[in-house]
Image (cartoon, rainbow, N blue to C red; front, side):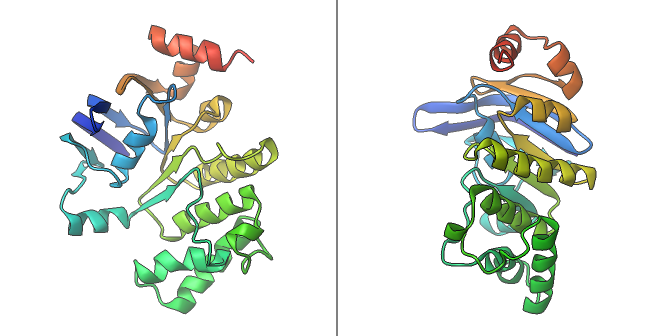
Length: 243
């Protein structure tokens, strides 16, 4: 997978969140976006997913420009599976219906085929017996696994994970990280924003380290964690890996 940014800029009001980023990121399966809070990680992920539009600059995914016009942008988004930190499940639908909905409403999959695919994913993610529970009846880890199943069900070209464990307790965090690790072992391609440094070190092929709206360092994950080159990354890792 190749991500290429050229002068990519994103602002909210007068605040610049992504500051003219220019970079080439190549990774076989997993890219981790790391860095301090407010550095631009989640915003960059949303731009990659076509959920936010930059004010300036451009982005290509596997050498194809991310569209800016609404109709082709909708087609692009339909090929991206996104998992948010807050699940974003429909509260009035049960787990099965949450997974089926994008298949039938966006991708035109026949209801019976969508049901079969969704049930297979629920079983694979150890959610047997929870298909007809609404989100309020599920634990946080179960909700996040339903959200992952929904993202995977559409057979996306690229998966995006935005802090998928930030709202979970340690046991539920372990559940979800295990699922994400399994996705890598299946050969899935994804970009991961996380503060779980040890997990990032284990699962990521490449790291892009963001601070102050810039990619200040990039490289192989093992090399980054063993010997970060920039002072900003060194200080960050020293702080987050201290305890």
